[in-house]
Image (cartoon, rainbow, N blue to C red):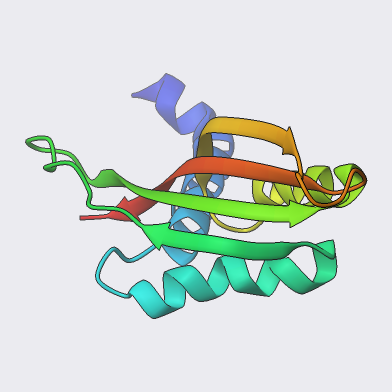
Length: 129
């Protein structure tokens, strides 16, 4: 007990950091039932990255595991743009406010324009149950 009292300031600091992390997670989760908000997140990244979202779909989620708080919500998308801009979009996904994982990424040159790339992405976004 004495050791816990001596380390109280460290424990309070750790608790504050944990509460801040939980708050960050709660604010930046997707909501599986709110498709327009979820898709809107990706469309807001489109213009600053100078790419075009050709296709964007929220896919059916797998059943939620027992006694879990979070679940993945899958998305598939196809984007077009220059090599630099498509990489910028992927970087924006990785560093954005939402918590997600890029499951697959496929780059191909466009058949109509040699300077344009077509990128197919599959993404798992973190959502609360």
